[in-house]
Image (cartoon, rainbow, N blue to C red):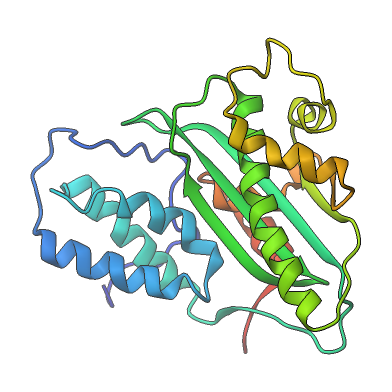
Length: 249
């Protein structure tokens, strides 16, 4: 890949990967080797975690189109070899969360994607992208489940900080779906929420306990978008700047 042309995003917004699109198969061992190396890299490069996770779904009988998507990531890494997270000195200890869900991102099984970003002051300390385990029936359900997953991680981080005598108080979660916020803040069950599994309603329980607060954040400013979908160049660069990533000199 050393002689290939660099590219400025890890995945194209027009990419639509399926299990079998009719293209020829590629060697599984080589494909998996690339995926495992890239997964290792996601521990310090949150900007590629969505694209790598998407390609990792096709490690069994990968096709030419899947390999092309992996090589697209490698071309992006060639374009940004010095991009890194920045941790400033003397920052505050405010814990802030961003959560987002993308409805039916995975075309081959019609499941959605959850994404989350956890900030300790201005510093990104935890991030994740995850395919949801079920086919959601609405966008509000996708966003609500994504916020519930974010809440679970948030409570774990809160407990770790408590061990260091750092009190966080009520922690804000920002996401861009007003319906999901209403579900979390409304204790009454009704027809719009009866299909949501009861295990996700611990989010509502923690809102009632005042451990977290649900806050609306405009879609065009949602930082967690980078963990749930393929973005255009302008949107992608805005997101990694918001993650406090810089290009080292």
